[in-house]
Length: 123
Image (tube, rainbow, N blue to C red):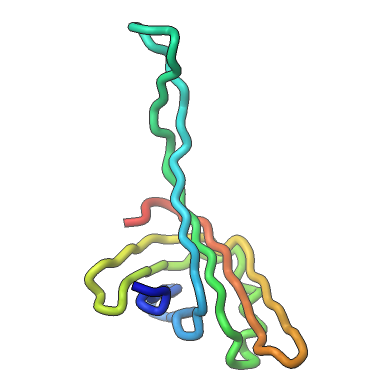
């Protein structure tokens, strides 16, 4: 499996905001631990699972001038779908766009990135 076998779709309702031209993505999940006291031993630390979280970063090519407005998408909620090409494995969730960045370099394709923080479960 390679990165091109994974498809990420950002949408709001039935409107797809990003899917084509995504060059790379990175998904992170986390579960912090909470220390607890033990009634049976005091020599070793015991932990419980804390609240889970997830985040997603997407890097894309800006293939049209209209993509300049992507930086205005921050603060909005999106439906996120991550799946393989054959659609046999899928992850879905809702996420808040926390950052948008664009790089415009003379002589190169313009690039952008989105950072999203999961709101609720990733299923």
